[in-house]
Length: 146
Image (tube, rainbow, N blue to C red):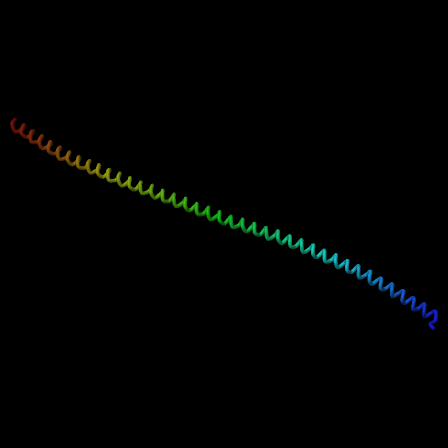
Protein backbone atom coordinates (compact mmCIF):
# COMPACT_ATOMS: atom_id res chain seq x y z
CA UNK A 1 0.00 0.00 0.00
CA UNK A 2 0.95 3.41 -0.53
CA UNK A 3 1.82 5.52 2.28
CA UNK A 4 -0.09 8.55 3.18
CA UNK A 5 2.74 10.80 2.27
CA UNK A 6 2.85 9.32 -1.21
CA UNK A 7 -0.88 9.78 -1.50
CA UNK A 8 -0.55 13.36 -0.40
CA UNK A 9 2.31 13.82 -2.77
CA UNK A 10 0.25 12.40 -5.62
CA UNK A 11 -2.68 14.56 -4.57
CA UNK A 12 -0.43 17.66 -4.55
CA UNK A 13 1.00 16.77 -7.93
CA UNK A 14 -2.48 16.13 -9.34
CA UNK A 15 -3.74 19.38 -7.82
CA UNK A 16 -0.77 21.25 -9.21
CA UNK A 17 -1.31 19.51 -12.54
CA UNK A 18 -4.97 20.57 -12.59
CA UNK A 19 -3.94 24.05 -11.58
CA UNK A 20 -1.32 24.15 -14.37
CA UNK A 21 -3.87 22.85 -16.89
CA UNK A 22 -6.31 25.58 -15.82
CA UNK A 23 -3.49 28.12 -16.12
CA UNK A 24 -2.59 26.78 -19.57
CA UNK A 25 -6.24 26.92 -20.66
CA UNK A 26 -6.56 30.43 -19.24
CA UNK A 27 -3.31 31.55 -20.92
CA UNK A 28 -4.35 29.87 -24.15
CA UNK A 29 -7.67 31.77 -23.97
CA UNK A 30 -5.87 35.04 -23.33
CA UNK A 31 -3.43 34.29 -26.17
CA UNK A 32 -6.29 33.56 -28.55
CA UNK A 33 -8.06 36.72 -27.37
CA UNK A 34 -4.85 38.73 -27.97
CA UNK A 35 -4.42 37.10 -31.38
CA UNK A 36 -8.01 38.04 -32.27
CA UNK A 37 -7.43 41.60 -31.03
CA UNK A 38 -4.18 41.76 -32.98
CA UNK A 39 -5.91 40.40 -36.09
CA UNK A 40 -8.70 42.97 -35.64
CA UNK A 41 -6.12 45.78 -35.32
CA UNK A 42 -4.32 44.49 -38.42
CA UNK A 43 -7.64 44.34 -40.31
CA UNK A 44 -8.54 47.83 -39.11
CA UNK A 45 -5.09 49.13 -40.10
CA UNK A 46 -5.40 47.45 -43.51
CA UNK A 47 -8.88 48.90 -43.92
CA UNK A 48 -7.62 52.39 -43.04
CA UNK A 49 -4.64 51.96 -45.35
CA UNK A 50 -6.91 50.78 -48.16
CA UNK A 51 -9.24 53.74 -47.57
CA UNK A 52 -6.27 56.09 -47.67
CA UNK A 53 -4.98 54.43 -50.85
CA UNK A 54 -8.40 54.87 -52.45
CA UNK A 55 -8.49 58.52 -51.38
CA UNK A 56 -4.98 59.08 -52.70
CA UNK A 57 -5.83 57.40 -56.00
CA UNK A 58 -8.93 59.56 -56.26
CA UNK A 59 -6.86 62.66 -55.51
CA UNK A 60 -4.20 61.67 -58.04
CA UNK A 61 -6.87 61.04 -60.67
CA UNK A 62 -8.53 64.38 -59.94
CA UNK A 63 -5.19 66.20 -60.08
CA UNK A 64 -4.25 64.41 -63.29
CA UNK A 65 -7.61 65.36 -64.82
CA UNK A 66 -7.15 68.96 -63.69
CA UNK A 67 -3.63 69.02 -65.14
CA UNK A 68 -4.90 67.64 -68.46
CA UNK A 69 -7.68 70.23 -68.45
CA UNK A 70 -5.12 72.98 -67.81
CA UNK A 71 -2.91 71.68 -70.63
CA UNK A 72 -5.90 71.66 -72.96
CA UNK A 73 -6.93 75.17 -71.89
CA UNK A 74 -3.35 76.37 -72.33
CA UNK A 75 -3.23 74.85 -75.81
CA UNK A 76 -6.54 76.54 -76.63
CA UNK A 77 -5.28 79.90 -75.37
CA UNK A 78 -2.08 79.56 -77.38
CA UNK A 79 -4.01 78.53 -80.48
CA UNK A 80 -6.44 81.44 -80.04
CA UNK A 81 -3.56 83.89 -79.51
CA UNK A 82 -1.82 82.60 -82.64
CA UNK A 83 -5.04 82.88 -84.64
CA UNK A 84 -5.59 86.44 -83.39
CA UNK A 85 -1.96 87.33 -84.14
CA UNK A 86 -2.24 85.83 -87.62
CA UNK A 87 -5.49 87.76 -88.21
CA UNK A 88 -3.85 90.96 -87.04
CA UNK A 89 -0.82 90.32 -89.25
CA UNK A 90 -3.10 89.68 -92.22
CA UNK A 91 -5.03 92.91 -91.50
CA UNK A 92 -1.78 94.85 -91.15
CA UNK A 93 -0.53 93.42 -94.45
CA UNK A 94 -3.77 94.50 -96.13
CA UNK A 95 -3.43 97.96 -94.55
CA UNK A 96 0.21 98.24 -95.61
CA UNK A 97 -0.65 97.16 -99.16
CA UNK A 98 -3.52 99.67 -99.27
CA UNK A 99 -1.14 102.41 -98.06
CA UNK A 100 1.45 101.40 -100.65
CA UNK A 101 -1.20 101.48 -103.37
CA UNK A 102 -2.40 104.90 -102.17
CA UNK A 103 1.19 106.14 -102.03
CA UNK A 104 1.82 104.85 -105.55
CA UNK A 105 -1.37 106.55 -106.84
CA UNK A 106 -0.39 109.79 -105.10
CA UNK A 107 3.10 109.51 -106.59
CA UNK A 108 1.66 109.02 -110.08
CA UNK A 109 -0.76 111.94 -109.58
CA UNK A 110 2.07 114.10 -108.23
CA UNK A 111 4.35 113.18 -111.14
CA UNK A 112 1.53 113.88 -113.60
CA UNK A 113 0.94 117.27 -111.95
CA UNK A 114 4.67 118.06 -112.03
CA UNK A 115 4.81 117.00 -115.66
CA UNK A 116 1.76 119.16 -116.37
CA UNK A 117 3.31 122.11 -114.53
CA UNK A 118 6.62 121.59 -116.39
CA UNK A 119 4.72 121.38 -119.69
CA UNK A 120 2.74 124.53 -118.85
CA UNK A 121 5.95 126.28 -117.79
CA UNK A 122 7.64 125.18 -121.02
CA UNK A 123 4.63 126.30 -123.07
CA UNK A 124 4.53 129.62 -121.18
CA UNK A 125 8.24 130.14 -121.82
CA UNK A 126 7.71 129.54 -125.50
CA UNK A 127 4.70 131.91 -125.56
CA UNK A 128 6.61 134.52 -123.60
CA UNK A 129 9.60 134.16 -125.93
CA UNK A 130 7.25 134.50 -128.87
CA UNK A 131 5.59 137.55 -127.28
CA UNK A 132 9.00 139.03 -126.49
CA UNK A 133 10.10 138.37 -130.09
CA UNK A 134 6.90 139.84 -131.43
CA UNK A 135 7.28 142.91 -129.19
CA UNK A 136 10.94 143.32 -130.27
CA UNK A 137 9.89 143.01 -133.85
CA UNK A 138 7.21 145.64 -133.29
CA UNK A 139 9.65 147.84 -131.42
CA UNK A 140 12.21 147.52 -134.17
CA UNK A 141 9.49 148.22 -136.72
CA UNK A 142 8.47 151.29 -134.77
CA UNK A 143 12.08 152.43 -134.45
CA UNK A 144 12.67 151.85 -138.09
CA UNK A 145 9.64 153.95 -139.03
CA UNK A 146 10.77 156.84 -136.97
